Image 1 (cartoon, rainbow, N blue to C red):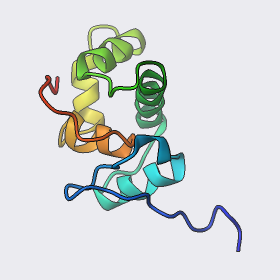
Image 2: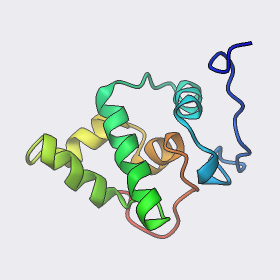
Image 3: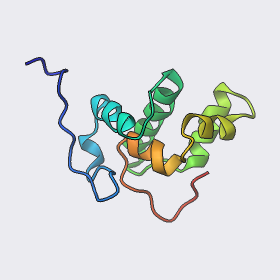
Length: 110
């Protein structure tokens, strides 16, 4: 069997967030996105990869305001609206879950 044909989902909590973010890969992101009804396009991947880079550097999930600032670089003045166009059910509920973050607690969702 080809390694890319089947992806094992790492353990998740009761809400569907990965328990260990280091077990994430892009195949896992595709599966989680499919479960919540999102087809990942280039802008989704841009946000997800930004979030993963932030996590790798800081060992915490990026607060939505960092992602909005990142998107403002591509869409001046439209980062906030673009984030919620990409993830219409919310940054925490969709972007964090797809990017393999633990469920964020106690900070702004955007």
